[in-house]
Each structure stands twice: as C-alpha cells, then as structure tokens.
Image (cartoon, rainbow, N blue to C red; front, side, top):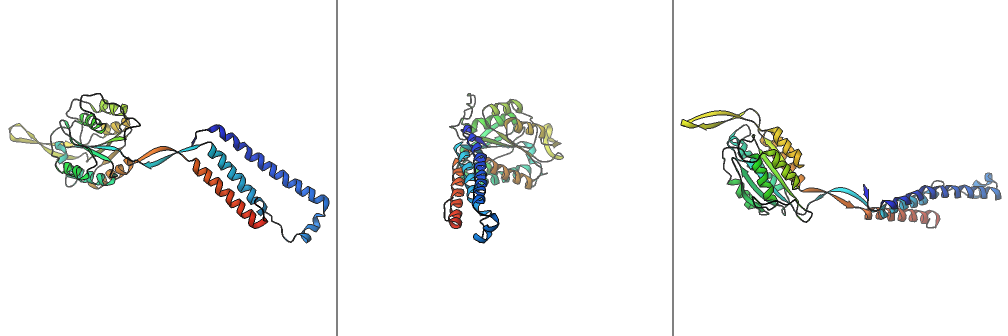
Length: 326
C-alpha cells in the first residue's frame, strides 16, 4: 500500500495518546469514587456493572479515528482490474513442421482450435489481429473487434515452409501498434490502448531477416509484451520434400529456450503445450490474463466508510446500553 499524502499518518500517533488518556481518566474516576464511598458497599448500591461494555464504544471510536487518519493520507493499492480495451495480435506458426501429428489431429489444426478458444476468452471490445509466419511474416487480419472475421482468417490459414520467429515478432508488434513496416514505431503511451502479442511456434528460427533476440528487445522498448507458447514434443517427425521427388523424415522440436527468452525479455509469459488439451488450457489462461490489468487505485473512500461504520456502531451500542452517544 502506498500513500498520496504520507505526512498525514503522523496523526496515528494520537491514537495511543488518546487511549492512555482514556485509561488514566478511568483510574481517576475509580479513585474519586473510593474517597466518597466504601468500595465494599458498591455491589449493594449498583445491581450490575457494565464491565467490558463501557470500553466498547471508546475502542470503536479510536479504531474509527485510525481509519479516518489513514483515509486522509490517501492510500493506494494495486488491484487487478478488467481492461476497457486492448489490442492483441495472434502470431501463428504455419511452417511445415506444424503438420506433425504428435498433437492431435495435427499441431496446425490444434493451434487453430485453441485460437478459437482464446478468442472466446477475450472481452468483445478487444481488437484482435492475426499474423501468420513461415519463411516470412504476413498480417492476415488487421486488429478488429469482428470475431467472425477473426475466425474466418484462422480458417483460411495454410501451411508454408520455414520459420521466421524474429520477423513474426517485429511484424506483430507493428500491427499491434498500428505501424506500417519500415516506419519508426512509437512506444505505447498512456493515451494508447494496451497492446500485446501472443506467439505460437513449434520450431526454431530457420528463415527471416530478423533474429528473435533483437526483435524481443525492440518489443520491450515499445512496451509490447510478447507471450509465447511452445507447441509439440521433441520426438515428432515430418516428411520434408527433397529434389528429385524424394522426401526426408526430419525431427521437429520446439525451440523452448528461444521462446522462453522472448517472453522474459518482453515481460510476457512462456508456456509449453505438448498436447491439444494443454494448448487449449494455455490459450484460455492467457486470454483471461490479457483481459486483466494491474492498476494503482485510491481507496480513501473505503477507509472513510469503515471509520463511519465503526462510529455508527459504537454510538448505537452506547445509546442502547448507557443512554448516551459515547
């Protein structure tokens, strides 16, 4: 918890001082009563003693005063709140390795199905863009709130050949910030809606002109977190065509270290999804996470309301028990 006016907290020193005054006043009353009456005869004169009840209202008053003093200091807390709007770009690997069937029915089909789950988790006022990447990275859908357009774009994705992860990151960041390729992108500002990239890949960089490391550093400078998902297992194979009509069986494993580094560099999150069920779970979790934001919220009203409630309770009890407010 932080405070907008921490100097006001000095007022909390009054609480123990007032408590000491209250205790001293009670002792003074008892000594004064003892001078005018025999303490042994008091039970015969007063049928019952208020005992602990006499201290309830003053204790509540002191607690209320403490809450009010903290409220004057303008306390702030960090809360997870729902974002009003944001732009999320899905970067989906469409390289040949996505045809591997270690994830059923294939990595490619599982990725598209999980992306549909992701779309369902995002608030309707979030804009979603889609970038597909193989030997190059190409936007297939500019950011839009039209979910049907996003689903159509996912359905029309087709497999390519290589894997250009760095280019995919750079192009997705440009799309998220509404920048044209080749132009100097500007960092996200407080006036701009938050932007994020969710990148899914099942292989290592084999193509492209931009390396993943520099692309991730640029995304960090521009304030766009890139969350990554490594799809598949390390023992899947695909048939790669070779000259002369031949083909070669190639093992295709996700580059976990690179994808984890990209996420850590940009402030995103990394997840491994070795099967279809786990992939859908990851996308669902990321969709919920991206829809939330942590903001510094002033809670002065909560402390003021708490102090008022305590004063009301103390005054009510004192009126019922002793026919006085405090």
